[in-house]
Length: 581
Image (cartoon, rainbow, N blue to C red; front, top):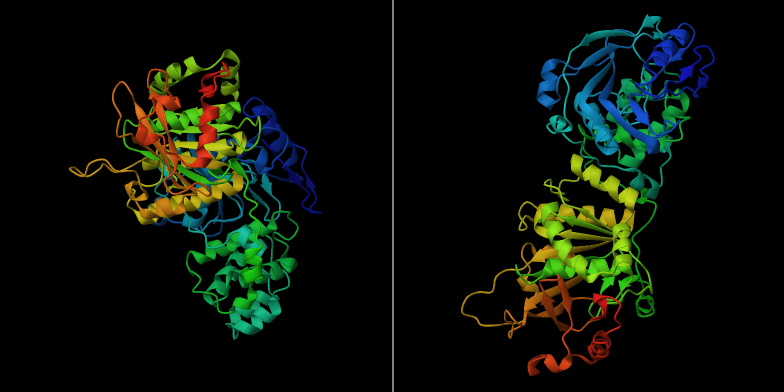
């Protein structure tokens, strides 16, 4: 934990004060006692993996927290916003200036949830929104607030402790502005902004033109600036320009390297009460939409990078679809395992020769005991060296809790994103879309939200996503028919958002002794409509293989010319592994 000091005479900080909690508890108490007489002492509620208070080095926290600058909420306010009763209330100087802490029932290592809970509490209870990040420091009990000549004391304490789920009732802030938007915009001149949106109330003009703001009042005063600007009809970039201009004089966040984040947070905080009603002057935007003239379109070069050329693009979204029992999971895992080993699978080959991809398999339909049974059969197809490579490159999530992309602020989602951050998989295999995209796949709103989250994941972590997905049952009495896009279960937006859709369906000559399946490309960049190939499923070894051409029924031998060469190659037995089928 970090306990920095500040000289109240010079405002200079001394940062190199770190302690291992709880092993150095006595040293922490001694540090506070030794320096409180002459210095402002601070303490981070969060813990760190090294001697750094940077969020990127955060390890976790025993508590959630909030900082109030004179606007302490009532019990009714807390109840209305769904915030549990705090475990500890600390008065940090004058009455009304308090720090609140909620003790977790176990050490919380999920930094995303720590910051998410702190932020939700701050927004709900109108606390200081500059205090929610995992690296923030507060005044510890037993120290002295020299600015107000007041001790930091405990107001109340109890034995309450909370699970992360106990904060689920606290409203999640709906953010209207983020740093990415800020970096895309041209921040306007604040003086011109003031003139443009005048006349202003007298108290607003007095606030905006105040040269200095007393320390301890700056945070709440900047919040008032944000509220006033939003109420007056300024857009987000205009509010930002006002906050930045005023804080250059007041100095609350001015000298911080992450000041942009605080100004954006102030805007989002104010937008909870005063949502933006629309851009009044589009010329504030830095860029216009990009367009191409006719010849530029004709001369356009496709620079798409591929995992499987023409079929599975990098940062793409693919679907492997079929009815229950057709072997979707077998084929999906087989393809993913082949890519993890840098091998061919059926007629599919990586565009990057010998490239071994990292795979994260989200098994949302099978728990680990069922996946174990599946993998034991699959492992019969691999050599010892291949199994070692899979141990390194192929990871599986198979827990009862389902990762729901349409709930992007859930605690489990935060843990999932942390896994992506640490592992950086190339391919995310999800079984199945039914569990991850929506509570009901006909729910357009949830599906759309999931696809937006997916786009963020693919862009930020650079991974390709392949879903295993169900199709509708064939209507009775209609005989055999080839698969098409209308077979996909759920919202039509799912198929529209996909870059690749591969169908797996029983061949019309399918039998228990000849488990022949038609593999069809329902949507891909370079394959013809409904082109594909035939494969045979071996349920005992959990693999698919290509049949020899002489073993195919006559109806299956007419395949597109571009597939014939692949079929020839796929029947060559190299003797290396099951990928040589």
